[in-house]
Image 1 (cartoon, rainbow, N blue to C red):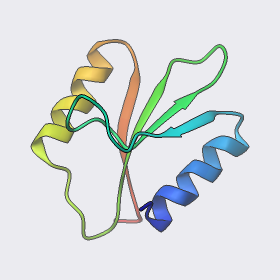
Image 2 (tube, rainbow, N blue to C red):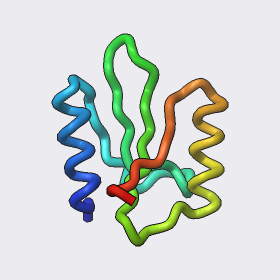
Image 3 (tube, rainbow, N blue to C red):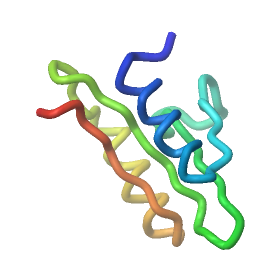
Image 4 (cartoon, rainbow, N blue to C red):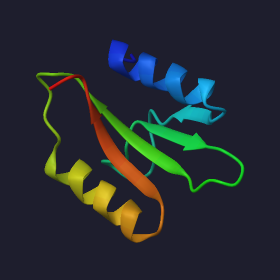
Length: 80
C-alpha cells in the first residue's frame, strides 16, 4: 500500500512528464520504491519515507549502487 507521501511523489513526477512505476517486488531487495522514466533523462529511483520511518542499510547501499551505475537515486522524506 502506497503512503500519502509516495502518492504525492508519484503525482508530482507524473505532472513533470515522467512515467512512474511503483516497484512493489523485484528480484533485488532494497531497491527504491519508485522508478521514474522520461525521454532524454536518466532513470530516477526514489525511496519514499514518512517522518518516523528510517532508511535501512540495504536501501542506502542500493541508492549508492544505483548512483554509481550512472542513474539518479535518492531518498525523499516527508518534511523531516
